[in-house]
Picture 1: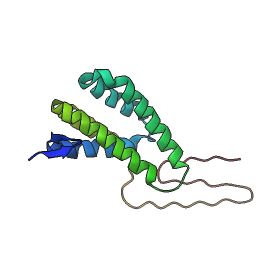
Picture 2: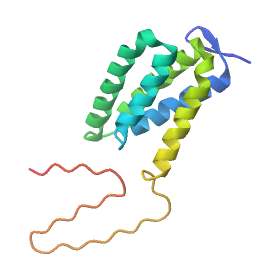
Picture 3: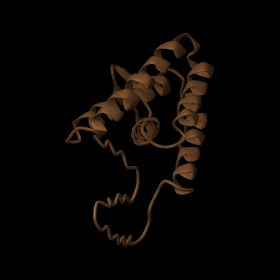
Length: 149
């Protein structure tokens, strides 16, 4: 059973894969190893849509900038918009080139492995700190951005 996406019939598996890839990519926009993530997406585009490589490179950089800027703000809005944009990009790619599914699935698996190797915290975390006098303590369970002024 095919589902319609932007006026084209697309296999539901491919839509699910596009959703997973888009959500995963947005989660990695501000993570360590961003260049590796970016290069993986560009490689898939270069293979299946070479005419759109420059455009996707610009979109990736714009998305990263937006995600970094959103990290300084409040609310989940920007991440949701970025996910929607990338789910759409991946769905369009897979709609035009269903044969790209294997490479995209491999890329998403690589992202999952990399995240499991050091960017995901599982279980309980207990942090304690003590500062005296003019001391400062900074603790984080994950990424931390500090701007002292």
